[in-house]
Image 1 (cartoon, one colour):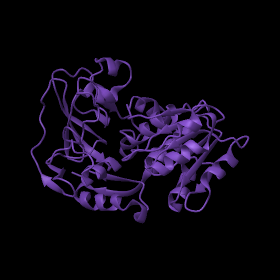
Image 2 (cartoon, rainbow, N blue to C red; image 1 turned 135 degrees about the vertical axis):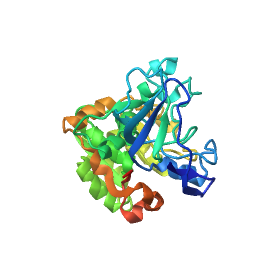
Image 3 (cartoon, rainbow, N blue to C red; image 1 turned 180 degrees about the horizontal axis):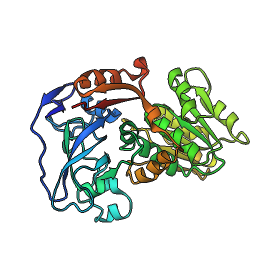
Length: 351
């Protein structure tokens, strides 16, 4: 088969590699119909994730058709059209049964293994461990593009942004950074009942796009005093109820802290590569809550129901479309997302 292979920092290629095989009784093999590229893949290529070994097939999102199942599979069967969850899970360890599947102890304490610790989904075929738990049936009427967004990005914005931020009916929510994961938070915050969802970014294209995802207001971070503008948008000038930080740099984390009201909440979604400052001397008295997290992807079925009901449409994320033989071009486009006006790319297997 063909697959996108990591060969060390800055090196990747579209290679001919051996087909995956069943290794454990609960495995399944899936023929990938559609996949995408995540910012995490770009971090791997930069060398930021040293646990990824050379020779690893990248990717952790996709939709496909089951071609083979191990004898331990009880619900997944050959021919099923499925969403591949980015999080693998045994569903028997204490963390899985508690809903923290991203820290599955059977898998060594990390549920994100595709394109990380085992070969991933940017390939014609992929082996899926614990397939009964990690494959979600794709209903008729839900497209492969929509389904692929349920592998990772939409649950991430919803779980780590909206649910961790405890967004409730009537809240004023700021989403700081409206790249793909920020837009996922925008889309699901509105569906959760937020009265206002304020998108903050320095990229005018993303700000314009955020309106289609449910943003009620936008703030241009390249020119406006963001904290002042967010407080103006709050009910009484004291600050927003929830600030979802979806960038991952110290400056935006600081904006999130500065813009919430007493009793407010900061939900950190951004992947931070350096330490941030937390002014505890100022904020110890303010009854604020700060949350962090890695997606568990347990909400994918709930979000799938919202798609079927027409409440949300994650197909809006797709701005660029490629075929598998254009995988390298897809990477080039996504790596230059700001210049290319790219949100998410979709890559389909036409064979």
